[in-house]
Image 1 (cartoon, rainbow, N blue to C red):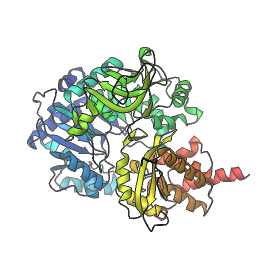
Image 2: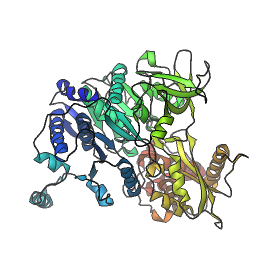
Image 3: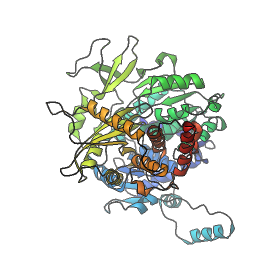
Image 4: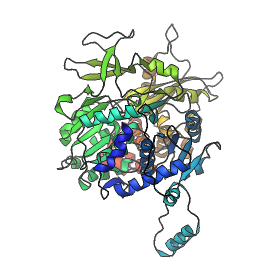
Length: 612
C-alpha cells in the first residue's frame, strides 16, 4: 500500500516544481527523483535489499529525505537517529538496532568513530568555494582529490528505476520512542501501518500540489518525517525547512509565511508559545491569501495558549494526538468544523478508541480511563521485545498510558498520564535513562527523575537525588558535567535537588507530589539569592541549563560554541533567568540574546529599572 503510493506519486508531480526548500536551497522533483533512482542502484550495489535495515545520522534535510523515501520505496526499513546524540548514546542505539548499513555525516564520524563492525557510508558536505584567490585554490584542491561519500557515489552510478514489490506487512519505518542508553524501545511500522496513516491524512487534510508546508520539527520525529518529506512527496507539494530551528530566527520564520506563500505550519506547543510571546507587530503574520492552518502536535496544547493564538492571529490551530506506536496521529481536532472543539484532542479518524479502567473494563460515560486505540495504524511491535509488545497491545488494543475523558459529542480530552514518560517541548524522554546516569556518579546513592509541569514546555526534566554515604553536599557542577558527557542536551536535568532521604510512603513508594514541592521550593529560594557578581550568577544559571560547570562558560559564550545551547535550551535559559532574578524579559530581549554578555546587558537594564 505505502510502496505503491510512493511509486505512483511521480505521475502527479511536476519535474520542474520545487520539492524541498531547505535554508534557501531548492531541489526540484525531477532532480530528486533522479537521485532516488541512483540510490536504488546504490542500495543494490551495497547488498541492501527488501528486509534490510539502514540507520540515518545526518543534519541534512535533503539527505534524510532522500534516504527515508528511497528506503521505503525499495522495501528497506530506515531509522532516522537524532544527530545530536552523544557518542555513548549513538553506540548504544546502533547496538540495539543492529542495522545492515549506516549513512552518517562525516562531522559525526570525526567527532567519534562508530563501531568497526558496521558498514558505513559517509555523508560529506559539498565544497562551496568562494571567489578570489582562496576560492580558486579551494576549487583546485577539490578537483584534484578523488570525490567520495554518498553524493559522489550517487553521481558515479547509473539510475535504476526497477523495484521489487514489498509485502504490506514488511517493516517500512522504525522509530526510537524512548531512551538510547537504558533499554531502548524501537517501534516497527509496517507498510500497512504507514498506508493507513496516509489514508487518514487524506481524509483530514487539504494538502495538494499547491501546498507549501513549513515544518519546524526534527527529521527523527515521526511528525518531521510523515508531515515532512513523505506526505509532501506523495501530494506533489513543496516542503520548506529552515534547517536547525533557532529562536533568534523566529522572526524570519514568520516573515517566510508571507514571503514563501506558506499554506501549512507544523510545530509543537513550545514553539507556538514562543511565537505568541512576540510583540504586536506580528499580529498579521498569518493574514495571507495562501495560509490555511497551524498544526500542533507532540505535546499537550494548553487551552489558554490555543485561544490566545487563534484569537490574536485569526487562524485555526489543528491539535492532534498520536504516538510513534500509532505511526503519527490517531485523533484530530480540526481543521474541519466537524472535528473541531477547542481544548480537546478531537475525534479518531481511521481507527477506534475506547476508555478503560485498570482492569480493562470500559468506563462509564463521563468518567476518565486509559485511552486505548485499535486499527491499522497500530505498530507491528517493539523490535526484539515481544514481552513489551504483548504488554502494550492486548486483544488488538494499544494501551497508550494516557488518561482521557470523552464528552457526549465524542470529543476526547487528555487529563493525565499513567506512564512515566516525560514529554518536554514535544520530545519524549525516558526518565529511567536519566536516573541510571545520575546513580553512576559516586556522590549519588539514589535518584528519582520525573516531569515537572511547566506552562511552556508541558514538562521539564526534574531530578531529586539522595547523596551517597559520607557526601555532605551535592557537587552539582561535576554531576551536570557527568550527565552532559552521557546524555543528549534535551535530556539533561533542568531542575536538580539533593535531599538527605527520598520521601516514600509506608509501602516504599516514592512520593512524587512531595518531590515536586521540594523542587519548586528550591527554585523559588534560588531566585532570591544574590551572592556573587552578575556575571557569576548568570554563569551559574546558564550552567544549570546547559549541563556544564560555571567555569566552562564565559560572557562571550554563544549558541554556536556552547554544547547544549539549542533553541529549547535557549528558552530554558530565558525562563531560568527570569525565575532567578524575578524579572520578565520582553520578546525583543529574547530575540537579541545570542551570547551571555547580551543576556547580562538585558538583565542589568531590567535590574536598574526595577531599582529606580
